Amino acid sequence: MSFKRIEQKMKEFLINIDEDSNNNSNIEIEDLEQKLGKQLHSDYKKFLVKYGGCSLESRKTNDDVEFDVCYRPIEKDPWMGVNDETQLLESFYGFQTNIDNIMDIVDTYSDRFPKTIIAIAGSPGGNEICLDLDNGKVFFWDHELRNPEKDFYLIANSFEDFILSLEDELVEPCGDDGIVSIWLDDELLKD
Image (cartoon, rainbow, N blue to C red; front, side, top):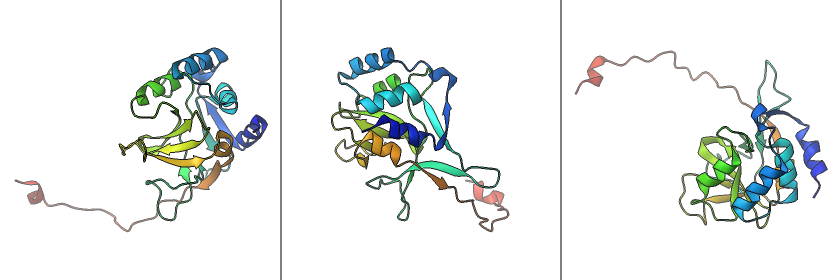
């Protein structure tokens, strides 16, 4: 594993780091590891220091066309359509003081995740991207399920593989559905 490969991949995207996120230091990481009772994998530690709290934007987006930053999972999750091959990435957690603070996220999910799994990034709809601290695998967590054995879907076999799977995906423009307006009779709303 090489953090240089992760850094190289990250250069493909515009990186938005909250000005509040520049306190990602080894002290915060040690506090997190103490809270977890486990060591973080080396590549993820380095990523957290350099990129924690960031969101990514595609460099391909311009005035005419929009792209999202997505990942290509090993296992499809329930939110993916039959023809979908990718899933949207929202933002990575870090040590900032807003809602994306990883220490708060760990507390939020401590009773819903196995002790070896932590959320490292957000996915649309309240779902999470998680890291297994024992084996280094990255998973998608479906917030609507309640079975810890079945709530997680494999995204990548390592954090590095997850980052390397990130790609730009064209946002399909919404087409005209043909509906210009709709009128409802007031009688419809009466008891």
